[in-house]
Image (cartoon, rainbow, N blue to C red; front, side, top):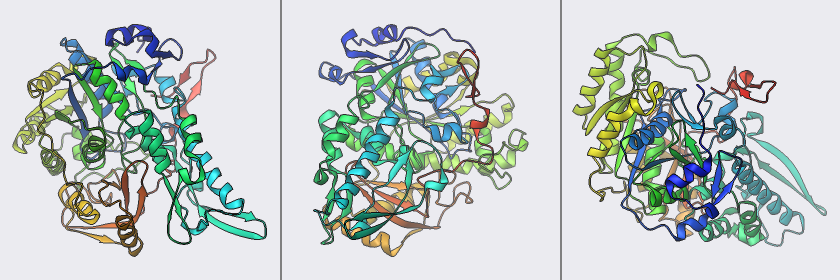
Length: 556
């Protein structure tokens, strides 16, 4: 589909962004200077989150819905923008693919956005890896801080999927002394610096958070921070442009801010607070998304991002599809990286009824946060009216305020007008009744248990001895009030992707606990989640190429 793009200056004028506040990167994308925040008055803008049921490996249309809903709101005469995360080269060349939507609900120019964009990912990786180098340099030159090398938790990162780099072992010599370092690489989206970029409220906040990063312990048991090795200023310099949100446009010319890109299964999975603040100051409605399902992304959006930003969402759109619900039944087996089985698209009321339990759990989870829930069924050509009517009836039965069919992929804004009207109808008030799932003053174990039991359906939580020790240590060090970010599979509400639907009563295992002091949360790993993905049997990158005119092919 060929779409004529507007100059980015025209998109900026629609929003009310002044020329001196834009930093152009070609004709169709620009960075927005943080100085704009000084003049933006607080508007009575509505803040809409788009999340989803437990996804299939190909996703259920959450990004398409986020983009398309913002276009549909503009079609109804409501000034709107969307805010999205940046694409990572890992899933782009691996199994999941692009992060720019699809069909008639896309953000453009998608080849540039999906590849190197404005260089933010590279800046994050450079800052991350420079910090590793400075830390080891301090050890090499006499170890003046008396760092316990075995306690180093900071890892290097790379914006690609490379399982061979998950675990590395190397020697570091300092005079007659030799240290063996056991470490590894994480994908850039899992770096704490990416989370810091996401959660920073302004440049000063970014600078302070970078200094708070905990890297290791001394032999006396004291925490070693990045400011202790004088690396925080350097990282802030590397990130001086990456901190500015990026402005692009949708396939219908609606403004879109794209900034930051943490994954939701191993990190917080949201776009940046700065992008949201800009959009909310310029628009009447802002539509944003969180990664994967309610359990992985929405809970973290609410309990971590909203705590950090002070912003309150006014409604949540819960995306599902018939294929996604059928995939949660015991009749369908899906292997990530392989083609979808054909029976996902055949009418099967039994499989749909089983899978609808997953929808029920997600609706119930969202209602814990006291905001309106609007179910959006992403319609595919093979879907039958009988099946669609069944899901709509179940959505109301489970407590959703509304349920609307979406054809945003095929029709663009026109295919989401009814969804947009529903959002307007359920967000008439400028106030929000939103509440957090847990109190920040609750003990860390209690926070983990509340998430595991109320959102995942667990019966209890079991801790590895090292995880238990870490929680006690971090609480004693004054970090007990931090929110908790749980790392787990996205393919099940539980920690085990083989448990489909809405499992309950299982034991939720916490194998490892780490401190992300700069980002401002405790990271708890369920089972052994990998923070560096691997490539599938047939990576998507095999199909990507460049034609003689320099146009990238095979992205979609």
